[in-house]
Length: 299
Ligand SMILES: NC(=O)c1ccc[n+]([C@@H]2O[C@H](COP(=O)([O-])OP(=O)(O)OC[C@H]3O[C@@H](n4cnc5c(N)ncnc54)[C@H](OP(=O)(O)O)[C@@H]3O)[C@@H](O)[C@H]2O)c1
Image (tube, rainbow, N blue to C red):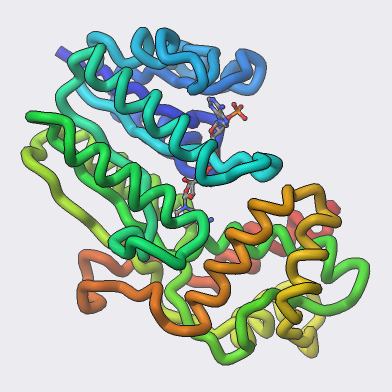
């Protein structure tokens, strides 16, 4: 019999690709998100739609009950007045629903750096969520810890268009692993298709290699016909001001600043050596050409 997998965040970067990959392999997908309209394309491909919010434990329990496994993620709410409280609330609801539904296997979207217990900004919420997942008796979990998403660079399109520069609070020479979200979805799909995992496993996903912010800027610039695009390290104050100007709450902006500072200090690191198992195919050059450049031109 085909297995049933609930995908939380099925319209997101990772959940969306994951749901499509599972459907293509004849897995029965329950696609969960807040908007029935946004979930409609997945419904047309055969998914059962669960429209509702993670703030509603009964909704989440219904989406999980009877499924063989679930993909769990804590969606980023960029306007949250208190980011950690929001992450805690959503995480607690997911855990309560896992327990109430009796589901036995989950794949958890966490992050590189989630092993650290302080100073990592938004990643700290995932550290707490991982601990909550581990505390559920007899729950088998594959915890995915992906690196910095290449999709984060899409947030710079407005800055590049209007100011002709790229920047963040990271130093130009700060090197970090960057990964395409579709490659994270591929790994999640392999795990959820096989459904053989037991116990708790942590998998770091490191993308093709590490890039400095300066190097990333050159790669993105080349793809949009701006080979001389320069990277600017913003002061902490200007970085926060820029995020808040883009509609992000002051608290979320502070969390992102803390994460940038941690990347600069080298505290957010992979714990495993780079290997074939944690290295993924999509290069930043490919992402820049195939994803970034078309969206830049459209914007
Ligand atoms: N950015 C990075 O570099 C990075 C690195 C490592 C880990 N992470 C983690 O990855 C996660 C983000 O993954 P992503 O980029 O795939 O997310 P995303 O694209 O923002 O997708 C979020 C999904 O959650 C749904 N959603 C949002 N709020 C909801 C709510 N209240 N109730 C129910 N559904 C809700 C959204 O759909 P609707 O809006 O249609 O409801 C969407 O399907 C975060 O936990 C983040 O910390 C990020």
